Image (cartoon, rainbow over the protein chains, first blue to last red):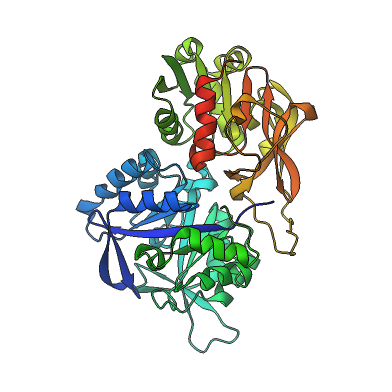
Length: 256
Length: 211
């Protein structure tokens, strides 16, 4: 037996509740974060990722309370992202009980943030989230990095950006295909495989999962180290355990 | 009531370690401390660590905790976690750093060109849940099934000089020691505080261990 591929349910949190959007817009309520975290832990989730999608800064501290509650009851790795702008934001999230902090927009806007946070707290707790979108009619195909929840184009090539972040001290990449997010037609396999083959650090595939076969595809074809999904788990269509049993049948090593 | 001290030398979040012990052992008083005198008076000591080993060693010295840690590792139930395992050895490749020299052996980095059986690249850091083979019985393995998975996140691994000291191993893809034991000392590369039931069981075992 060796290292298991990880299944990571993602919880988008705003105003203290878990919500799920479609193509980055249109939010539906999916429940209480602590309840959901406990349920996923019981089902055998390998990690949990919380993305704070709160727009206003006055509600930012809510996520700290949520993480504190979850961390005192759920003993698996917790990643938190959303609105992380300064090294001090990283510190506060780690102190609240996060094991890893995910940085997206601010990694682009503040080139020193990832390097500083990584050298202070260790690469193991710095995840760089990359929202990538296919450049239309590019040949060979390229992907562009978008920030601000997918609203702002950066002009950066996603794979080069991934390498830059690896060199600056990212411990892991959370890679979301904007073309696929919310579509339920499966990961962008080509994007995922390109990242995984190019980078030395683990790659988490995200965006587009509509069924367990997509999770298996992300690992078998996309060569991802971990797969992340939200809606298929939130609405009880499939449990984490069922997803893992399916992946095990497909010959993937998982923690059961 | 047994007092368990988690040594804080300023290298990251120790809350999860203390929370996990509190969760499994209501009979323990858990304290996170950087005070050497508190370490000296504790019944049990947990020595965690994350980040880079050169920084960890420097901070340990800067806070005057070096002696207290060395003594605790010789005298009382002592649990090293992650870098807290690596620092117990003579030397680490990470920054060519001398360790505490409590256990004979060295700390090495995983190679960058590792591949699994299917020819896929194995990433460094080794991050995620790996199976741990128990190399013989130990009170801290009590109630934990052999080959249970624990959560790892590390780029360096220990090579004890004495194979007999290793009480647990994993594969990535080479076999490496991920748990060592000697008398009152037990130390692991994985994170029991993040390893769900298996990890909580190990911490519960530590809280009542009488070596």
